[in-house]
Length: 185
Ligand SMILES: [Zn+2]
Image (tube, rainbow, N blue to C red; front, top):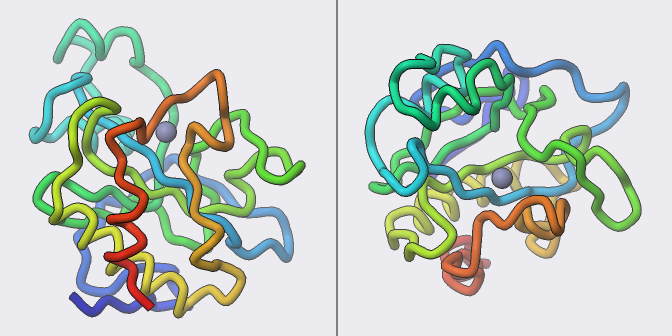
């Protein structure tokens, strides 16, 4: 898979786009220099279905599942989702600030959303992620490294790294070596 970011729009070319209303501008002059990896499944532990798209689009139905009532009205998003089959979905242009990390800190800097790109892997902390997902994420990250010079292979962290004690994703099942190999180079 050879992907390219169209830098003027901040969109990954050839990728499904489900643009979210949950974003705003990055602080003036700030370019992304960190990638934050996440895990998500809706309802928790179940894969497939339209619910992640709906959450990030602000259309999650309160009645769809008991868990949805708990998170109903949450305004969150991410830049990219990698589905179980490796398919990518983009919700927010990379030049914009997606709302994925929440209260967070990296190397003494607060508010990682300001300077990061969020990638959600559809999965759960204790369930192995699929090989196709590492391939999909790796292809996306290669394109991001090409497009945004402040990003780097050693500036890719988990949500649990920037929000320790509050977040556990992408979890112990996430294979960081597999991601590094998929990114290549
Ligand atoms: Zn997360």
